[in-house]
Each structure stands twice: as structure tokens, then as C-alpha cells.
Length: 497
Image (cartoon, rainbow, N blue to C red):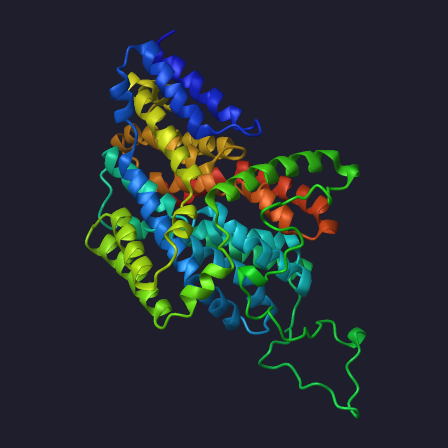
């Protein structure tokens, strides 16, 4: 057995081990790289050189800027603005989680953190406005996926940097094309979800009362309307129209998605087991990334005059300089975060604690191992096995299915970073580099809405306890169907771009 073949087997074992509760893929990949390097006679310094220092700067810089925006209240202001624009229209209320998720991830929020924010909003809306929990979940997660390929998002940064490192020949317009492709895919799924919701009653028709149009308190001569006479209840003025993560109805807090005191009914043992596994994974991820702001921290930053405007200006400058002038977005984000932290005297520890060090470890460890695999010739061997003679496009389809099936239970960003090195031979054979990256990225993330991972655990935890058992089955069916449908659709839609 060659070292290249052994490295492939070890990678498969690492991905399968992610199903074990408590296993860290980043740590496992670093240890595997060290041991495999010893076995292959690769010096330890050479193995260490495979660590992606540029990715470290990128992820830390982007998430530090997002942490500042969260601490000084800019993020809450953006969420409130989007939700006020929905007014009392139930269709727009159903769409609000989609828009919030897209804005969050496009601004650089990690998918797990965005899901933690969007889940209680989407499922809270579902409970309050009688929207189907499944439709609310699909719309929220699809919005998150729509913004994942933004130039500031981890997937967008990963796609651009890996494309450069692998010499795919991406054009200068690739970051914008990636964003447009992600938005188009999200809008198509959103439109289909809305159509189904309106047809089967998952999204009620009509309007709900908002603070702007709620009637004055009834006088002694005015009888209140009977609930039975109004199919769409008029909800009392309060936090619902001006939503924020802190005020979102949260039947089960995101820090404990499926609490022990409120298990899934015993009649659905499979659902209970899988959702608990997903919840544990989600809890660990959220504990490490510290995506929930300290309640006292945002208030201090938000009270400073001009904090919101200056933060938005810095974020816009990062986008313009990184996209328009090809400057390093990681260093730009770090610089902007430092300026904002000093200008408004935000607590440095709160910013550092919100950097997702577990994701830094995951990507750093995995790409170190992938670099060693490339050095050993493993990806050349895999390309030969997956290749369809005379048809690079069909080879891309096979690669999309590999990404989709593996992402069902493993980390999507890890799978995407792993399959990207298989793309250069296909590009050399005639596949569009932009289309290939888009197809692989979307095939990896469109299967994320299933109850076996972080996303599913957060969704189930935010749902009403009485709805969790049914929602688990719906998410599982949706996830299994997406494994079959998503790869071929992304390949057909974007493979030729």
C-alpha cells in the first residue's frame, strides 16, 4: 500500500469519526498529519509548513469585525430594521428570517452563529403567527446559505483563497459571481418554499397587528373582538415586530438546544437520539465560538454617539477595499476591528472570545492534512478514480455527489476544503473554474438542513417542544431528498458558468 492510498484511508476514517460525540476533526487532522508525515518520511517542519497561515488571518480578521458589530449594537440595529420593514404582512414576516440569515452570513457571520441567531427568530415567528415550523426552518437556513459565498463570508473567502492557491485561474469578478450564484440558489429554494407554504396553508394569508397599526386600548363602550371572529390574531405591541436575538421567543435556548428536562417523546426514539447528538454538537460549537453577546456589552457600545454609522462605514470600507482593490480581507477586518475597539473602548476580551477558535482549528488542521495529502500524490490518485473518461462535466457531477453525501453528517466547510483540490484536473480538462467552485460549494451546503448536525440541533432546540418530534421527521426527509436532488441541480445550474 502506498502512502497516498494510506492518506486517503485515514481521511475517510477522520470524516467517519465526526459521528463520534466529542471528536474534534481539527485536532484529529493535525495528529494524523504528524503521524503520517513520520511514516512517509516527511520532516515535521515540512508538515508544519502546510498549516494555512493566510486562512488564520482571514477567519480571525473577519470574525473579529463581526464581533465588534455585535458588541456595539450595530447587528441588532440591522436585525430590527429588517423586521420593522416586514410590517404586519405574514408573507414578509415569514421571509424575515431568510433576509436576516442572508445579511448575517454575507457580513461574515459563521453559519453556526447565524443559525443560533436565526433559529429562535424563525421558530418564534412560526409559533406566534401559526407558520409551519418546517417552512420557517427552511426559509431561515436557506437565507443563511444565500450569503455564504459573500466576499466576507468564510465560504467565499475559502473559495477565493483555495482557487488562488490551486491555480484555478479564477477571474477578478469571481467573488461577485460567487455571491450572485449563492443568492440565486437561495432565492429559487425560497420561492419554491413560499409556493408550497401558500398552497398547503403553511403560511397563513392576511396581516397581523403591529405597533404602528394596533388599535388603541378599548374603552368601556368598545367590545374587544372575539378571537374566533378573526382568523389572524392581533398580537399585542411588544418585541415581536422589532425583533432582536435577545428578545426572540426561545422555547429552548440555543446554548442547550434539546434540554434534558424536555426530551423528544419516547415514541420516537430515533428522533430523540439523533436530535440529541446534533444538539450536543451545536452546544459545543456555540460554547467555543461564544456567539451570544454579553448582555451588558452591547449597551455600552450602543450608547456611544455615531457607533452604528462608524461601524457600517468600516464594514463598507472592508468590502470595497477587498473586492475593488484586491486587498487582504483578513488584515482589513483586523484593522477595522482594532480601530472600532479603540474608538469606542469595547472590551478586548469580549471580542477575542467571539472569534470561533474551534473553526480556526478545524480549517487549520484539515488543510494541514490536505496539504500533506497533496504532497504525497493522493489527490491525483483520487482524480483518476473519480474521472469519467472523456467527460469532465460528468466527473464534476460525481464530485458534487461526493461532497453532498459526505456533508450530510460531516462539517460542510471541511468537506468543501477537502474536495476543492480535486477540481484542478477537471478545470484543465475544460470545466469552468467559477462554475466548478460554485457547484461544489452549493452541493456541500444545501444538504445542511437535516437533524443530524449542528444546524438541525439548533432548529430542533428552538422549536416548540410539542412540534419537535414531527419536525425531526420532516427535517430528516428533507435532508435525505436533498442528498439526491441538490448535487445534480447545482451541477446543472452552475457547472457551465
